[in-house]
Length: 194
Image (cartoon, rainbow, N blue to C red; front, side, top):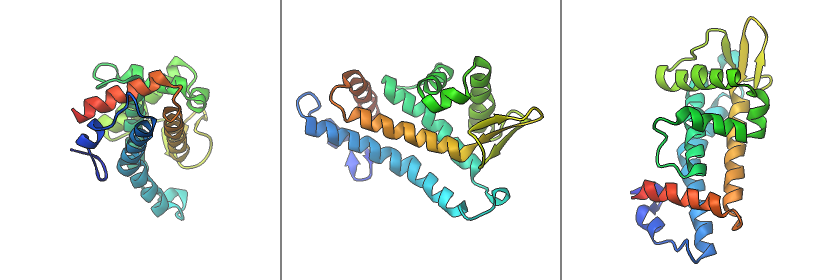
């Protein structure tokens, strides 16, 4: 099984993560390639395609948002070493928000986290629509703003935050001192390649 471009499950299994720091760096590079190829590069192509368009003419928001919602849960599963998130999606999603300095600034109450999870995440992934008629997906403004009659989520800003969280995770994994984080990553990836 190919786990990243040109990297197969056997390549992962042959890494000596018990004794080789060089192999640890390769392992982290594999994860970075996997996420970039499967998620971040396609989003980048979509964003570039609509970059010069006026806000009203940008049309890839739901596709990008769907990938980002998938990424939040997937990234949190890697951070916690979870094989899957069956029955714990909400918990994983909330934990990702709480651990993100930027997301937790905007979604700082149970009510807002619930709205983000149910109306946006569940709506987009399960119904291909936002489940809150007052919420607009925009490409301008703050990450989240409530104007009374309606509220907005800036999907471009959200994507930037998720990308930053991923880059921070990669940086943390490269540090030998983050033993627990590395163990959880190893557990998750070992499950994937098994």
